[in-house]
Length: 158
Image (cartoon, rainbow, N blue to C red):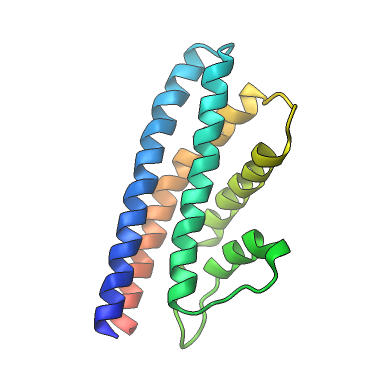
């Protein structure tokens, strides 16, 4: 189990680094959009990065779920069930990965990702994009703390 756990922790670390790269792009685009709120290309680019951010988090959650064989069989509810599952401490299987606070931010990002992917023809609201980007930057620190707790518990308990 020790080797498998080392692989899991390495995969998580790799994915976290990918997430941090997206955060860098979000931060840079947010700063620019706040200065030029009428720039539709910049607004759309920031929205795309927010979409990517949630997808990258979901990829991290999938790594954890697959390792512990936490299968989700209902494809129509996969995204919300995966997110909720990461908030669960599953006794004898794994500690929870995310706090309720992270869940709230991530769930809002999940909802935005769905709208961004499926709402063709609607114009994105610049204030909404800026607000969500600011929230995502708060999530970064909260999730990082959650991730450190998760790693520590895995190493201690498994």
